[in-house]
Length: 111
Image 1 (cartoon, rainbow, N blue to C red):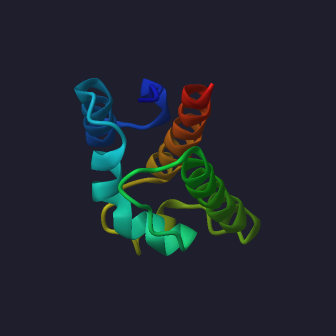
Image 2 (cartoon, rainbow, N blue to C red; image 1 turned 90 degrees about the horizontal axis):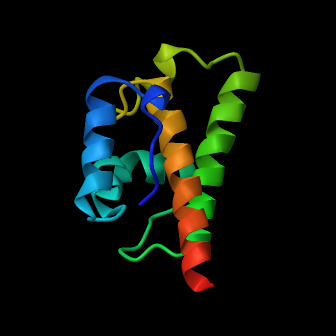
């Protein structure tokens, strides 16, 4: 499981994502918590067994969401108001990084 940098996100989110990482449970608990956000932002409903391509696609689309909001001048704390499970912009950025690292790990597993 990818390692999240502690300064990337804060508070309870850091603790919950670190607990997931340390548990060896894989990315599934993250998907369970953020499924509605992932589906709303990416248009992608992830399966139980994510492939490298799935992780890449999710991370890429979350990053695109961030970029679109930046360009529109909407990248402030209100951007997460429509997503009850997401508490901050930092959490959105951490999720994008998590899925990018998931992709890297899945690619490495293939080799």
